[in-house]
Image: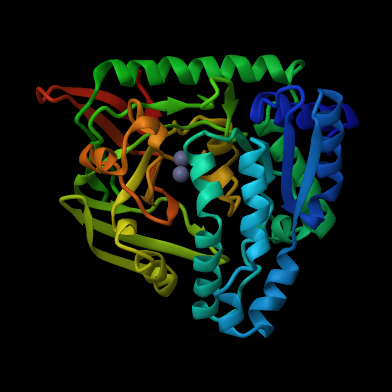
Length: 410
Ligand code: ZN
Ligand code: ZN
């Protein structure tokens, strides 16, 4: 368990390093009702550091499950208008967003796939504007996590529920560097290391990234023209830096959506929308999925890949060494925030406009021209195994080793 002081440090990290809230700014805390205690602590810290107003956007995964079981599909296919109106307010008032991600990965087990998909699509459509505002860094945002009983039980199924929650707190405390004497200083140092590697990658301006491992991955991912590798801290459109994911271990950029060829095999299960998809492989030709298989959760994978045209290409490639504290913990969290930071990953669907030079001032056509991908989806899946070798290939064909046996060599 964390001490009271460590909890306070954690909440401060979310406000100051994560969202980097500025004095007199409005803050939105978005989380499940089960995380109320930690949300209140964040609210308290936000006011302490000068927030003008703190909004709570409560989620309720149990209610969502009840709805999926009991409500009609036609009802689930529509999100009430007020949802758009609230998000419009948030954009207008340039809030910063702090989300607490703590979902039970199996909460929707037993719910009908078509209802789940209908609900998911309706939410994606309703939140399009606010998602654009966060993905383009118009609003600063961050995601942190705290354990909930349902989630902890999935991660540590063999122990008492309370013991499971405590084990989760210990793991998260270590990963968040809350067990160091000065967590803020530890984060600064970590962010600097990531930035040094991102600078190396940017200075080489690779045309392709080539990934290979014994599981069967042999994939060449072309990079968007004028791509930029981003790590840890990003810049909001107002010039204020922020850290979107806490924890974060990744260095990522945009693939070129017409230059991806080969096959990739997943390294960890993909948990999407309450479904687990595992032992799957995807084959690409000229940037598009042309074949896919899955031993577990084939229908769920199929549903993702049928959501629109853009989901058939990639919007992100991210590199993470196997010695990161999350990877070292050996824990499968069934939560993207942790698992995607434990392993190199790719994402089906939309790319971040911030991962290409001047991305936020380019038109949709100009972004497409550079190979940037658009979709209503952005679904990360893990591909980095302990034996993965990764090279950067320059426009002149020169090969630069980046990873050997799952770890950075630069
Ligand atoms: Zn990522
Ligand atoms: Zn992603």
